[in-house]
Picture 1 (spheres, helix red, strand yellow):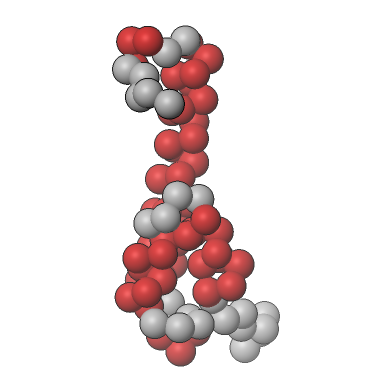
Picture 2 (picture 1 turned 90 degrees about the vertical axis):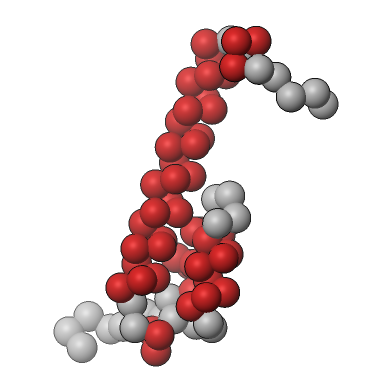
Length: 76
């Protein structure tokens, strides 16, 4: 599949691309901020590995939020 230029895309495709990119960047930013603020003891695995994994589109941030963080009981 050949890459399409911005000018060759329909308005619907441009909108979908912008929304997808915004969601991806928001997820990644939130995950990196959480990772930076979270103590290493509350992260499953090395923080450096999670920092790299978060860069993987959608999958990385979702994996970090789903499996990378150790849950702390409320009130602890």
